[in-house]
Structure formats: C-alpha cells, structure tokens
Image (tube, rainbow, N blue to C red; front, side):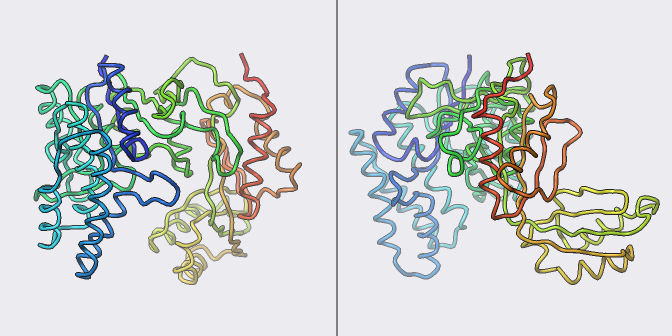
Length: 442
C-alpha cells in the first residue's frame, strides 16, 4: 500500500510528540510521504507557532519588538531539537526569514514559515528527504491550481521513495508564497495523496476520529466509525471540525479514503471517510452540527405560487447586495430566506426596499438570532419517523422549531431554532438518536 500521513499542530507541538510521530511512521513503512503542520499549542496557555510568525510580521510592519518574537520562536524549535538530540541548526533559516520580511515579503510568507521549519526538523529526525511545498503546490491567484499541482507533484515524488513535506502553502505564478486558509495542511496532504494515487490518506490529530457531535456541547460524544464524503461535506459546512472541508475534494476525485487517527492513541481505529460503504452505521444519524447567528426574511403574498418568477426576483435582490442565502423554505403564499445575520445587517434597508419593489409583497417580517442545526446520516433514508423523533426530542425540552427542511437525498434534515436554544437542541437530538441507541434498520 501507499499511504500519505499528515500530522497536525498538536502532533508536532513538542519533542515528545515528535517521538510519537516517529513511532507511528516507522511502524508502517507504507507511510511514504509525511506532511506536517507548524507546532501547535503544548497546553491551554501556549501560543501556536503560526500565530507567533503572524505576530512577527506585524512587528516588522511596526518596526518594534522583532528580536523578542524571533527569540521566542527560536526557543520553540530549539526545545524540540534538543529534546530529540538532533544537530540541525535553523540559524540561517531564521536570518533568511527576517531578511525577507524586512524587505517586504508577504503575510502569507510569514505564516507559512512554521510549517517550513517544522518539516525541516521532522525530515532530519526521520531521516527522510525534505521537499519544500514550493516545488509541489501551485496557485493561480488565490486558488489552488489542481492540475499543475497534480502533474508536478507526481513527477517530483516519483523519484523519491520517502519524504517530509510542509503543509499549508505553495507558490503562485510569480513564485510568491500563498497559503491555504487556516487548517490548510489537510489540503496539502490531500493533494499529495491524489497526485501519487495513494491507497489511503491518514490524517493524524489529537482526537480518535470524527465525533457525532461537538464535545463542547455534548459530553463524551461517540466516534463515527465510517462516514461518506457526502455526509462529511454536510457536517463540515455546518461547522463540524477535525478536517479542513477543502481537503475532501482532491481525494474524493480519485476515490481515496481518508482515515482520521489519534497521534496520542494510535491503536484506536479512528474514522474512515469513504466514497460509499455497505457498512451499517451504529446509529440512525451519523452526526449533528450547526451554526448560530442567522436571521430570516419571511415574505407573504396571496397567490404567490401562481406568480411566475417570484422567487427569482427575490433572490436577484439578495444577489445584487452580495448576500448568500442558506435556506429557502416556502409555502403556497410564503417564502422564507435564512441568511447570515451579519451579512444582512449592513444591507438591511436596501434589501427590504428591493424586495418591496420587485414583488410587492403583502407582508415582510424579519427575525434575528437564529441557529441552524444539520442532522446528517445515510441511515436516515431507510428509517421511518426520523423527523418525528426530532420534533419529539425538541418538544420534550420545550424548544420551538422555527424551520425544518429535508433535502431530497434524505441524507440531512436542517432545523432552525433560536440561538439561546442551540446547545440544548443539539443535546436533545443526540440523546434521542445516540444515547437511546435506537437500532438502524437491518
């Protein structure tokens, strides 16, 4: 097998974590290409190295406090190097970084240096070649050039059996460093996996897989054993963490499964993310995720259903104001738009005037401070009464449902509630479908 293993910031935070990474890599020589993040937090009061580099960039702009921040970053890496008894020196690298920042190099360049330096140290520790992401990952403007990345990465790596690669960044047409959004090392690993046609993409982090719900809301939620790309996309969009959502697409295109694993508990199975599976889920639902701070625009007009182009006209007003719509549940004489509250607030009166002029409604009502919750699962399609159980769970907690919308795929149900009921609603749904342990249909 050919495996790509990506280790996140928590897996690279200290020399002790580096030792765990080495044990994992050496335990399976199918792990050929290792992608690493910058060192993360060692404890709750610690600072991520990427944040330190961003602070360094800001200090350079102000021409104040530069040496202090550089020394702080140096200490982080030196602690790792000394803890592993390595002889590598990063002094020339730090001199080059400071020189380039003083010469006006970008914030993206500064933010990427944590991964660059960490990959240099990890390569030395594992005894693998270091290959800079600048040789493999390419951007066109601010977007990744997937075709060029795949072609070049495949060519470069074909002559190298093992390698350590920094995540999070690449270069554009001008040779300037460009970063993905935060968490983008996941994307780097996915791109490398797709380029070399890997059999498996392992994503090592500090949890033993993808959880059914947010552990900050639900106490000790269950781990999802298997999840499809489709389910993961739904949950990631609604705020579920662990994996950068853009990391799904490159491997999905090639049919490569992703396995979420725990660096601190490598014996745990973790979560397998696959294109499809015959494996039955343990619960009817696969996961629950959600976001707060939405608002709704409720539009009423008699005989709306008979008016050709009504919805198009309303959505055109929203588009003209640069606003995205999350959901549009409708009735015979009603249409409701769910929108990020912050987006609407700055265009509120212009939007309302536009709708009034476009469709002349009988009534427009606004409601703020709403939350949307997605209940997702391939087991829902073959199970009766899922929506009814959700209604029952929320009614038992005296939570009023503002909206319910089921996709045609029957893979997900979206529920709208007030912000103040968000956490209680998630716990109620979790308790109904997981703690009650109602079996899936065989």
